[in-house]
Image 1 (cartoon, rainbow, N blue to C red):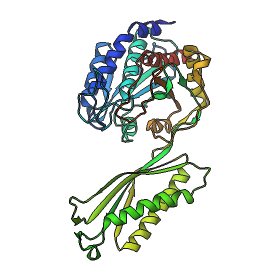
Image 2 (cartoon, rainbow, N blue to C red; image 1 turned 90 degrees about the vertical axis):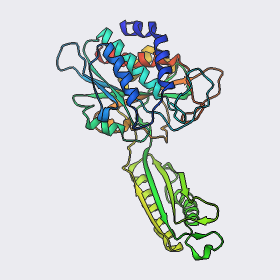
Image 3 (cartoon, rainbow, N blue to C red; image 1 turned 30 degrees about the vertical axis):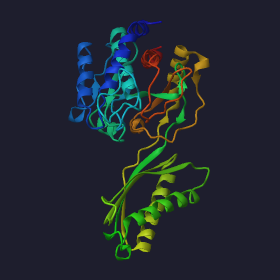
Image 4 (cartoon, rainbow, N blue to C red; image 1 turned 180 degrees about the vertical axis):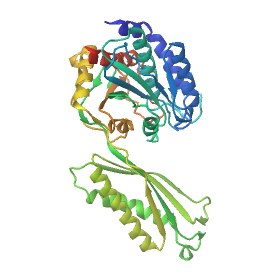
Length: 389
């Protein structure tokens, strides 16, 4: 056990208090000003230099080193934003921001990175240099790009992250090489028809009827156009139209995502949706405009960096608690944007309580076993110590 371990174990209660403070005070993507200010205060008190991210959201710490040159610089990254979910947990640290909740564990990620930074500041491992990246706007998929433009990866040789996993028990760690998450594209479809009285639909072009047909076509058609061996998930997550029961509206809005394991399949799905929009518009006499956001790539863990992380996890948790064979998730994670610039690895950290039901990510009852907090922080520092070994 080194100085970093001792620091984190002795401050285990402080990690819990930190996480609960963040959990009580969640902020949505693009609004992380108070979270940023609070973390910045903790870094300042610990004597850790930093700069604020774009628009005063997010933090990039200065590169810390032991004085020697030509050392590899390893960035450790955590996300800070919360989700538009009303929390249903009956706990003392329940969200105090109505309709906003840390339902994806970003409060835990921030806590673990913050205390890892403090532990590293205290132990000053030799043979490696490090930087902390506290990132906003992960849930909307552009926070990583914003931080990269702001210099987060300048001078960095590799980047490490971890994500809590409620499917794994506390103490379990997944460290796997290769693909980990899906390529993801958000899309928006605007359907323009001709509104009118609900009693006379023949005098209108009903965009709700058009939307219903289009959703059905997308769900039925795309799986028949993609090789079944290439996973594809298309989800319409938002439908909006109208404001009264007796009025046929002029427009309808659909929003959704396309998730795949390859850019080629994602491109094929996009072309199929465009074609279905054109055909449905022609059939109904409507106008349909579809737009796609930039594609978020999948997380692909670098084998060399993953090997360092694996050795660190094994030394920390033991062989029986480290999982190396893991199927990729269809979830998306903008940590992938860092990996287009430098090699890296995202690990998964179990947070499920024993003898408790799974509380999935992005749900109103998500919570964690807080015993995972010092373990995650120690995993961060162990990776750096392993690098310098």
